[in-house]
Length: 397
Image (cartoon, rainbow, N blue to C red; front, side):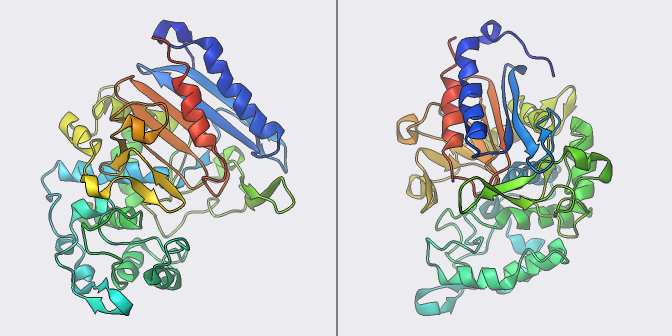
């Protein structure tokens, strides 16, 4: 992918070079095996740099077409899939989920001392898209919410189950809050993925491929990596007890080396920098890319504005409060620069993945940036915030 001279689109080449200095430091200090950083403005690529190794065990250098586990960066794609169906008039956002998923008809809310009570109203599709449905992810030790233990026991990510079976298990669990009462990051987008299947009549992988990936030319984005492409899949690492890195998922034998039955709309995809950039360009260009339109401009505008009242802002969880951010449909949205305390712009929208990946799109600056390591847990290092500062400080015009 060709890059342009930074100064031609209002960035400083010398300032952009600071990205490389910082990122190479993570590799040299054995904090990360490798990563890619990417910046574009006005649809033109200004920075695309590879660092370190795809995996330390075979010493494969990072390559521009490396395939990454994007985990929760799947969520905006799943949201787009549902909004494409919304544009066909097949449902309204405030429709109750039970119109399509009747298993939620008997759902209860966890109240004081474990009492199960009826919800004040039904969960809506809008609640799912904004993470205000009262669902959880489980495994939130900081919150000490009893329902989370039930989530863990439900084994929602059992490899052999289908999306339908997963959603049935979710619907059997109590809500942690009344619908609309709080923003709480959850399995909601996995439920959205199954909604796409029910409303479209297609498996989620087939819908993604036919309606999004093929039209946008996202050739390497999928729920698994074919044998022909496995040499391009990066390894996944975590921190070793004695320092350095522990291999968590071997690219040749790990979970993405074979087709899954469970097609997670919340965290199931792999992708490349080039592919995800095409997806971001579609969003930043109001739903259209290279003459192919997936969404109308008003739909993208609705997705990328804050939908939360002040009482539910800031979003986040105890270990990661995102000050200055609300939430749209499938993406976080910046609402206050001062509260955010980071360089950026109001109305910028973004999200990240469990393996420390992230993207952001800034409509004011016409800026797209991608950070692609393969290290978990996310938040272990402050690399996302550093990358954001390094991108924005390079703007000079």
